[in-house]
Image 1 (tube, rainbow, N blue to C red):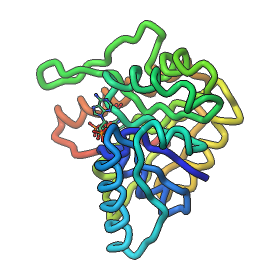
Image 2: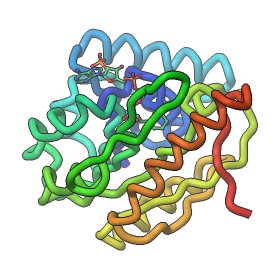
Image 3: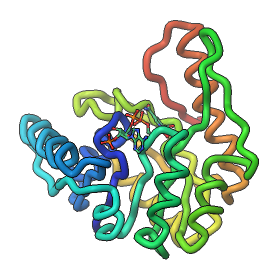
Length: 218
Ligand SMILES: NC(=O)c1ccc[n+]([C@@H]2O[C@H](COP(=O)([O-])OP(=O)(O)OC[C@H]3O[C@@H](n4cnc5c(N)ncnc54)[C@H](OP(=O)(O)O)[C@@H]3O)[C@@H](O)[C@H]2O)c1
């Protein structure tokens, strides 16, 4: 299965690229720049081989990556994500498209959730990509720890979506990643709760000097 990481050159895209490639998924790192995408793909392959893994990873523009993939994950900052998918509607038509997007802004030492008129980032993406199968997931996964292949973790990943079949595919894919447990979190109207949980996590980290914590429901 081909998975595109749109903006896969960045923090969360790196972790997802590495972890999905290890599982045997064909990873396509997307970028605005084909050159940067190819360079990051090569770097990710080096990281895998240094840890004794191999994987299929290549780099392409976001548009080419969207065309070729079966599943796309939108790993770009929230301010840019909506415009990005607006321009990729045709390429992402009917495809499972995952939103890990957390709309937030810094306010002193704290982060605040930015209210989205559609209800949440996930719902706004679904409104734009009305012919795609939008699933909301991975908001609470801390990128640096996730990308470190030596790090051990045990995190839950609440997953929301209006398309039950698409959501099931994403839950199963998530459960394949060592240390992650995908949990069905209902339809996309629940995405706001999951997105804003990341803001809570970041504020807990800031106030209590904690590093890169995830969530576990137990
Ligand atoms: N970081 C985390 O711990 C974390 C955890 C959970 C969820 N998330 C969510 O995941 C998403 C990505 O976060 P991140 O920290 O991985 O982001 P990031 O590293 O800051 O950026 C990811 C990539 O986005 C692309 N990008 C930057 N500006 C852009 C623009 N104007 N238009 C199009 N693409 C642009 C860049 O790729 P190119 O320059 O190569 O195009 C960049 O490498 C965010 O929506 C965030 O809310 C992040």
